[in-house]
Length: 127
Image (cartoon, rainbow, N blue to C red; front, side, top):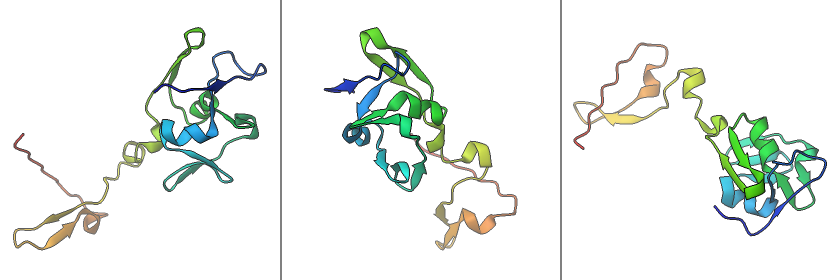
């Protein structure tokens, strides 16, 4: 994604990427709110040093959520990896998300109905 304007802060690292807070939803779907940086029902607290006027320190935010960043500041290129905070928690909780499938009689069955029990889920796709 190309941005029209980025900012800088001489007190921060040279590779820090400062983006306008109004561009943040377009970049990663987060919005700066009084609760922090929020996306859907997830809010991540941010510190005051991540905000300078209309700018937000995207690299500091990435560091706070353990998001990998590769930067070539002189070339004005930053690459951000996956956000573990958005991973759905499957890897850390080892709990599969709920889903619904019909049983042999066509009645809906939810995976959540088997919580606390061992379940074997077999899937198949023709593609």
